[in-house]
Image 1 (cartoon, rainbow, N blue to C red):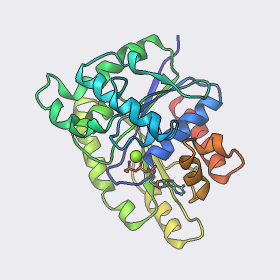
Image 2 (cartoon, protein in one colour; image 1 turned 90 degrees about the horizontal axis):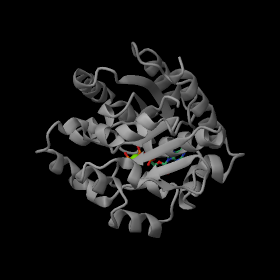
Image 3 (cartoon, rainbow, N blue to C red; image 1 turned 45 degrees about the vertical axis):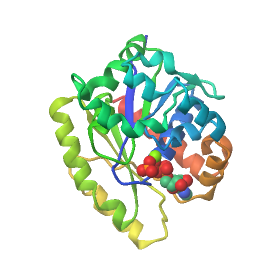
Length: 263
Ligand SMILES: Nc1ncnc2c1ncn2[C@@H]1O[C@H](COP(=O)(O)OP(=O)(O)OP(=O)(O)O)[C@@H](O)[C@H]1O
Ligand SMILES: [Mg+2]
């Protein structure tokens, strides 16, 4: 029985590459023989859409086999797992109703720890090597739940001025979360949608490298249209086009993630 490592992908900045990174790091780890459970924590359903087509995702979202239903009933998430077409890779799908989860948690006892409790049996079983959770672009009670259920948080950042703006807020929020979940660790920042030819990218990397106590992943993910094509086909790019630059970059990132959590 192994130890399950739980990592969430969070950043309140929208479009910073959380869902793309979560799906591809997950698929890359599964491809290396690790058993991975992905949890779609966002009402936008993007992590679910990375593996299933629109019709299937909407069907899961409308039914009872999704995270919203599980959280509402404070149920063990084991009963909400669906298998993807890839070996070693499972998913707890989301629902558009997740938009009201914040409101519904408000009156619950120990409301910050509901997701942690729903994941406890799965973690204790040791069936999965990794649980990866995709967070929505907000900082509130639900993201607090996601962080409190995680051992690590990985922060994808877009190499743009507005991508950098707000990072301080994110780290202030993480410090607040650590008051109630002291074991939570920042795994690091990964730069996404990079254009390595631009000076702005180089400056961003330098700025991030200087952030005290925060690890900057050596791997970064460049802008690549293969990512959009892969998402159009409901497949992670590491499976859709293994020869693409972004597939190789995501595999390198997954290796770096494995290396960092095993220290
Ligand atoms: N390396 C890349 N190259 C090109 N496009 C990318 C890349 N990474 C992500 N994208 C595109 O950028 C958009 C945002 O990515 P993604 O959905 O992963 O971000 P997010 O942080 O999950 O967004 P949100 O905050 O809305 O949840 C998507 O349309 C995705 O296709
Ligand atoms: Mg997303």
